[in-house]
Image 1 (cartoon, rainbow, N blue to C red):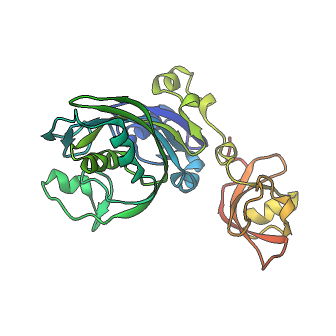
Image 2: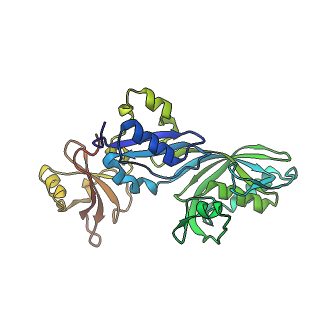
Image 3: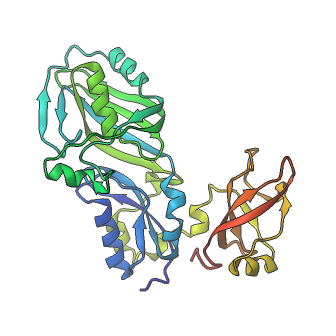
Length: 315
């Protein structure tokens, strides 16, 4: 096989592997160099990890910012230095006095736009160095908080006790650390908490129900049938079908001609200004991703290509 392969694999990362380990697995299996994931999943976590192959790696930025859905198991009455099972136990407390109502009340403070500091053991950077690299040296630094959005956090199951267990479903924006939420909820409750187990159920348009394990990928005669064409993977973007002559113009670095807003399929009434759209050739293959430019309230828009992939980017 070669780097002429293009597409995205909706893989299910197993526990114990880093996201980079999964990418290396794909590179070796397909005998390619160009592959990359679209958002780190902690080694102990499992679930959806989209891996871009070939020219699809150039589209990773459009998937990195996608919202995520997780199912998390949180244990009350214990804290660890990594906020999850990978670290050392720092404290143990009896959480028997914590009620479901108390947990629900604590979670309310973590819905919506919140400020969150990354854990010391994380891939976030401080002055050019990964935090986990500093943590390995025993160095702890002040971490700046940053805004993230938790669209929903719902209790799925509750088991009270000395080490009470809470299972929650969380839908959140890029950059949200679920283990930080667990740790911080424990601080609010006064008993401590850590993330016991995490499953990423959805990453943008990719869901676990349609995901592929590494074993399935290996057993599928090379795994080619699991490669998702790029135009399908970016189907969450509205689309514009170019005319034949416009395709060549875009390949040559020029813009396609202006067109009415009604030519943009999939807007569903959303504002059009600054939206990203897929530019497809007449056969439905991805040519480029472009920004929509408008003038005032005009219903005629211009399209400014920001990333050109070529007419065969999907297969």
